Amino acid sequence: MSEPFVNKVAESGLITLDLETWYPKEEIVVFDMKDHLYMNMILKERDFREALKNLDWSKYQDKNVAVTCTADAIIPVWGWMLVATYLQPLAKEVVMGDEKEMHKILFLKALSAIDINEFAGAKVVIKGCGDTPIADYAYMEITKLLRPVAQSIMYGEPCSTVPVYKKRL
Image 1 (cartoon, one colour):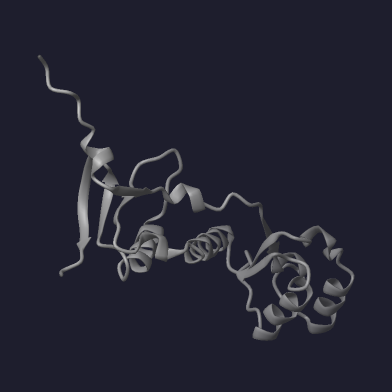
Image 2 (cartoon, one colour):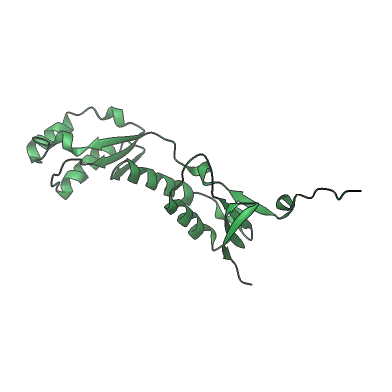
């Protein structure tokens, strides 16, 4: 008579956390300051203010907007501030940086919204492989969030993990 198959992973009490669940999928729109500069290089206050005043800002409604300048131009601090005054009432999120920076901020914001109390005393496996490439900063952030509450944190798959942290009792 053969031994019954025992799923040791299922019996281990491990909780698998897949960061893809919080991966931002929302559209990111770029606002390039260059397009509103004199000769795409120089910020002339009067012209810049007029360009912003006459811009159709409705296209940024409920969007995540990355504000950048792709030209090698010197933008005074107040220029960035002025753009923010137009975008802030409309946009979902406004970030000074490119699409990659916006994506990072959205991802970190989503991770910070996780109720870490759900993982109190738990053995957590942070899933390491998936269809979506997850940046290293996300793994670091989830580790920082879980460390105070989790019993242990591992990386990989439940059947093959790399120990990262174990609470000493």
